[in-house]
Amino acid sequence: MFKKILIANRGEIAIRIIKACRELGIKSAAIYSDADLTSLHTRMADEAFHIGASAASESYLNKNKIIEIAKSISADAIHPGYGFFSENASFIEEVEKSGITFIGPSSKSVKMMGSKTAARTLMNKNGVPVVPGTLEAIKNVEIGIEFSEKIGFPILLKASAGGGGKGMRKVYSKEEFKTAFESTKREALKSFANDEVYIEKFIENPKHIEVQVIADKHGNYRHVFERECSIQRRHQKIIEEAPSSFVDQLTRDKITTAAIQAAKSCNYFNAGTIEFLMDSNKEFYFLEMNTRIQVEHPVTELISGIDLVREQIAIAAGNKISFEQNDININGFALECRIYAEDPDNNFLPSTGKILHYKEPNGIGVRVDSGFAADSEISIHYDPMIAKLICWDRDRNKAINRMKRALNEFQIAGITTNVKFLTYILNTSEFTNGDYDINFIDNLNYTESILETPSDNKEEHEIAASVLAALIKTKQKSTTKKNASVKDNSWWEQNYEWIYCQNKRKVKTS
Ligand code: MV4
Image (cartoon, rainbow, N blue to C red; front, side, top):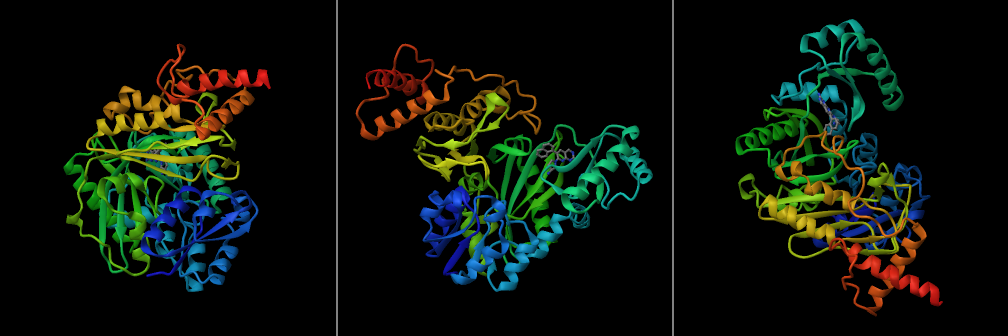
């Protein structure tokens, strides 16, 4: 097993990896940018090394510096987390060349899955259903129109080097085709330095279902069931669930078999995810393969009992997968809410600044994977995700109720978050019934928060929040006392107005 792992990431996933290292008796080494000098991941790791300025290009995306540090501290392996270099084939090649183990797949697998046309061709050859369309890039407008008419409009033009929603355009008719084709090519060239574009039939109102797979370097393949990830906005997932309430056992057998076949077809090792679109008839189509650990991996961990990050590390070290397929079962139900520093009342504008007060929910079936604490700074440089709240219970309905309770307990002040928005979604009948697809948030009529905030003055919010934090710290006063104007039982409503009164009094007398 490895002695020391360099974690080439930050925030909650760096901390998640540190926890796995500690349980395995492996030393963890963090890298940190200027902005992360006092961040949790920097503090929690056994060792921490400054990498550069706050901008990602100067720090977490500084390939040479990362490998240089890994060598100089004699790290045996690098864990990339998600984002940053996790799916960068040239980074993986460099790591492979340096003699350090990359905790992830081979650069070859990543390259293969990075080309959407290559991936489609490979999947098609191996019996994995792909969306009807072309397996190769479209050579010219005439061929494109002829093919589109054959499968029927609307179609999607997709950049071969794209993915995650980048480089996609819907085309409704042959009249639009030429302009759309040319601009998709132009944009693809600019974004990915590759202008190959192919055609897929547009699937109407599908669900996004993905299958977790694990493979080792000895040719063993396992699946860890599916996740439902349709609740998203602009390709940013917000709520994920496992298992999917839409997927019956027969469909599950089919889609997990297809996922394992997909992983085999590119000689994959590491944890990975096969993304599918599923239509209302439960027909599913391969979309992309994610060759990394994903943000939403905890829901799978909670229903299966498998520690996916531990498996990743062990597999990279050359171990076999620690379980047989028949050893694991779906136990209960889990969902994850992503807590973002953004303002749903203001077009989801990112909210930056200092977290003045922070308290996580806890209790049975509640897991919080977070990168922040009180006094943490949410900067413009990185992802606005503050924390992931993951709840488990024996069935979906119970888990949703537990999630609502936990969201209500989550105390974050100083910045705006989407916590109320998440609660709003959980209360919709569509969500409760599992009756939604990838267009759910776009079609949602969320205009204003149900509850009024006591004041729109940011400065007053901040003062009140800091007074609240101070009061909680010194336990000077019970802050859970209800007053007449309380509209619900959220901590904000219970505490904020009370503290705000206190604060006003304080300001007056001082
Ligand atoms: C599609 C599609 C409908 N039909 N392909 C978006 C991300 C990228 N992975 C593929 N995407 C889509 N491909 C066909 N043929 C709809 C989407 C899509 C989507 C897919 C999954 C999750 C969220 C989405 C949001 C908008 C569009």
